[in-house]
Length: 226
Image (cartoon, rainbow, N blue to C red):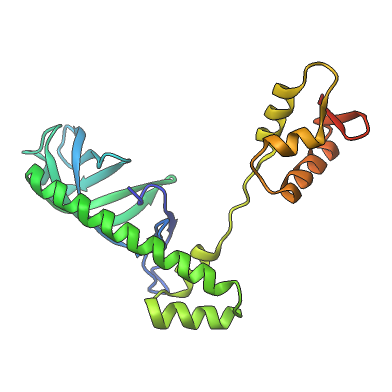
């Protein structure tokens, strides 16, 4: 469920800007239409508030109902497969669905929706790969124009696509040094042979570990964990 793994942006009523979420596939979403199984249900005693925990087999998300919408939850039980339509909201860091429409559906419909979503994910991943490849040899303005004209992707989503998250390889390298060390340390060449990363990346990580004092060189080109 990419709603859980997306990034939420709060709106601004004064500037008439709605809230939205950008999924890992760089789709901007403010209202959702999902099919999932109900794993938990809660209704307040005064019946002015209710929640459902929805699970689509990959992730779970909370759906909330307020005031007159709470009546939609009364016939729903844990184990039911439901169709939910609602706006995405965020409360204390948790993204949830504000229920507008809720109804039971059969399992066949759920399976059809899963196939439909899988097809969309594959298509979106191909688009992201194509844009990233184009961006390697193009200016910022060219990339913006290309993404908008070919795929109708705006600047918010484009920024999300091109954002590169730095991967921290230090814990992995530390673990390998520790496992290979038989007492007198590990030769750098042995680490490079073992770790399935480019040599330049490994050397950079080793340099950072040395600077941070997490490893040291008991003798030239030999490393040992502190």
